[in-house]
Image (cartoon, rainbow, N blue to C red):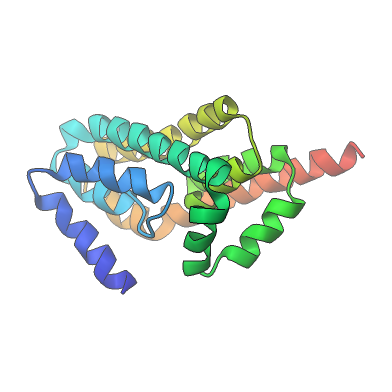
Amino acid sequence: MLRRLYDWTMSLAARKSAEVWLAVIAFIESSVFLVPADVLYLPMALARPERAYRYALVATVASVLGGIAGWLLGYYAYETLAKPILEMYGKLDAFEHLRGSTSADAILLLLVTSGLAHLPPIKIVTILSGAAGINIWLFVVSAVLARGARFFFLAWLLRRYGEPIRHFIEKRLGLIAGAAALVLILLYALFHYTQL
């Protein structure tokens, strides 16, 4: 099923309405959708490199708005809507553990690492932020910085290197972003636990 969803998302890049679909996918990725917006963003930016930054802006804005929707879902409708969604994805137990044991600072760090490297999936962190009552404005600023950094960095890579960088992005950028996220988490843990 995930492969069909991925293929369907890729097919949207060839449509005239691709930019609208990019906004839709980026929006719902941040609250409920399984496939990252990058899957649609990459072929669009490669097909029209002169629009790479425009597409990055669309994806960033839509992703942040979707993140706000996830935050609202966690804050106002956790029991009625968010919990069944998390249960459907098999993430409810992990979510409840995070919710009960994670500080506000750690949740903001997770938002940044999730926005940059999908660690953990962004939909989990946006709902968690709302359920934990993270300040909405702090949440928005963190989301803008993290998602904007990801999409605009991809735009820069694609504009600078074009098609040859696509293979690198698809295969290795996730590993590099994951390593950067891990470094951020380790630095946070080091700072946090040396202050105790």
